[in-house]
Amino acid sequence: MVDRLVTAIAEMREEEALAITRELLGAGTPPTQILDDCRAAMEIVGQRFEQGKYFIPELILAGEMLKAISDLVKPHIKQEAEVKKLGKVVLGTVRGDIHDIGKNIVGFMLDANGFEVYDLGIDVPPEAFVEKVREVQPQVVALSGFLTLSYDSMKETVEALKAAGLRDRVKIMVGGGTVDEKVCTYAGADAFGADAMAAVTLARQWTR
View 1 (cartoon, rainbow, N blue to C red):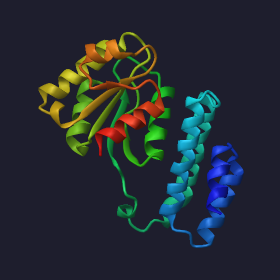
View 2: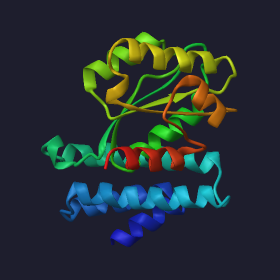
View 3: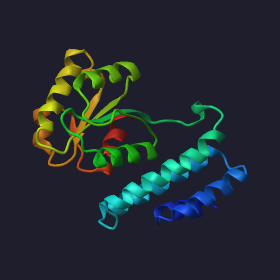
């Protein structure tokens, strides 16, 4: 039964995945187990993306399936504490940039792999990152940008966190578009994530 759900998600069969989820819930399967199966399926999806078997459309569809399944499962979770999260991540596309496909995929994959994600959206000013970091006290901050002008915004965001006395409390990753190791160094971030799975790997390393 569980393998059926993992396979349906990994093979992009949305209607089947939702039907199996309803069936599992009706049979009394623990909601947390279903979410674990979703994470297992998303790992497969991520691996296929890395191998060049899946592309961005598949990642987006997988993320949409995850959201739909989560919407079915959440009412059955009596206490949020039952869902163990690996850590918190504050995510956003930096000021001056409105591209969000890459950011959304990273958010999907982080959520699927057990992280509590706070997505601030697009064109996010440094002070908004500072405010959210102060509020939720995450272990990780993920800065996304597609345009070259985002490099300065990433640097300004890191400097703003430093000025607020929060820089040493978080690990910062950057990614998107033409972002690379040089941009990471320029911005003063801790690491560069080439894709969504790289972001997940970094987040896991930083929250062990």
